[in-house]
Amino acid sequence: MPTTPEKLRIVFVCMGNICRSPTAEGVMRALVERAGLAQHYELDSAGTHAYHLGNPPDPRSLKAAALRGYDFSALRARQICADDFMRFDLVLAMDRDNLAQLQRACPPELRNKLGLFLDYAEECDDDEVPDPYYDGPEGFERVLDLAEAAAQGLIERTQRNMLWK
Image (cartoon, rainbow, N blue to C red; front, side, top):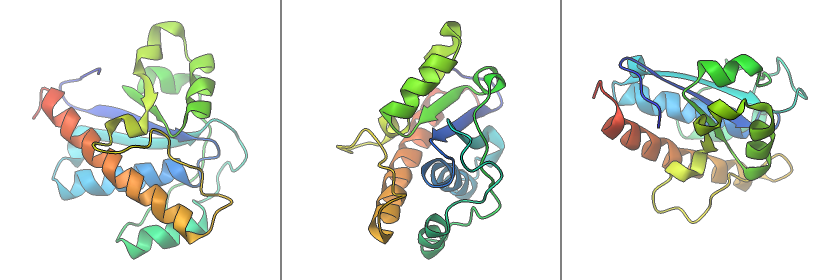
């Protein structure tokens, strides 16, 4: 895992950047703030497709998040761009399909930055965050469960590996 002395830059990526990746960003942001570590992370989210550019997160994501005390209503969808592969230390996809898209777009020398978000979820049998877009409220709750587990694992792992701990 790449390290920097002051900040770890992470971008979370799904297809449209309105459900899974903004949830991952919002949960991670809240957890690092609660832990007093916000100054050590630069967080963002993006989509592999341009379907929802400039749109806020899906209202169902926002509703489920609000019930758990998260507010990421200020986020807006954007598409991953070539500069992101240079700018971010970790580019974490929500599923294998989006990871494959990232691998095709990423310069070969930077592919070590790519991974799956759920690789950081301790004791989780899933390795992909399912897309809740066509599901009911339970799909958005499941995304939150997985995002909380992976974000906590990511914080713990980066704390062990970073120079500023």
